Image (tube, rainbow, N blue to C red; front, side, top):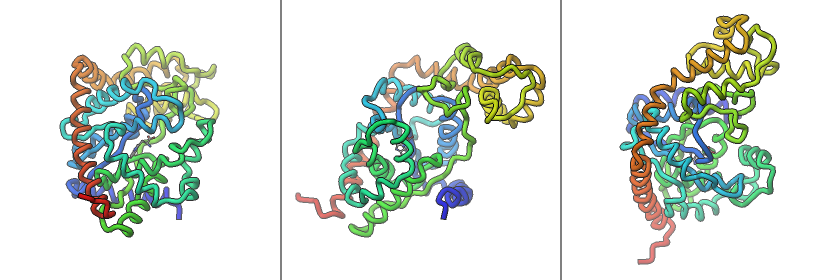
Length: 347
Ligand code: TRP
């Protein structure tokens, strides 16, 4: 069985179940604070989190700072990335009073779950994980112990708060599958403690970077949520298009033109071909204007709200302090259950 198509089929039913009984679900999801959040994050996951929360699910968001060093040496400007993400969550409509937003490294009891969890998986299973293999290959470096085992601490991220719903892209499927295996094996050996979480696949199309490659901070090809309208215009202006004035959507032969069409399409809610037909023989200049206006109109309110929140130095710090406090409380409680189940309670 193909686990991607199975999860995709399951996700439609699951979405309906979540809408019918949102109070039964605790969502745990998150990202690595490696830089400013961009359009791909917004349309891929952030908007979905706000939607789920508005339905009434209990939302946990992890800023997985330890995961930053799975494929690089140091954490870089991690503090700035963490606070920037919180501003974007709030600007995107996530209720930061209700959500628990926390940093991985600030929750010691969560990280303690890693040790018993490691005993539940084999080295062969770890080596088989396709996402770890792909990330390892892309990193161009030796496989570190942290990279090899990161699906296991990701299982701890999800299970410490008994998250039972993980909205994520398909690259995260192997990790959630491993999380389910770990939960099942733990429960079989020690008694029922953990739920087996389900993936809710995020449905948005992949948004290419402005050069047609994958959107990535390191390629400098992404429009970040916090950019000003002028910065957005300048970045789009630099996108390499081509000399054919007739605009068509063809990602293979016209990566720059097509990336701009996809960007406009996602913000306007219209398909790429229709936008291309409307531009007709207008050339790269007209296309860039359409894309720039589409992004700047769509994100005007987000950016205004973000700037307002950024002006209050206590806002993001306060959200994180409260999130870390709650995450620690829950992690301690779960660790207590784990100790009781394993028989390691000595007082
Ligand atoms: N691995 C995810 C990423 O690279 C980030 C992440 C960490 C995550 N812990 C998680 C995602 C738990 C979903 C659930 O983007």
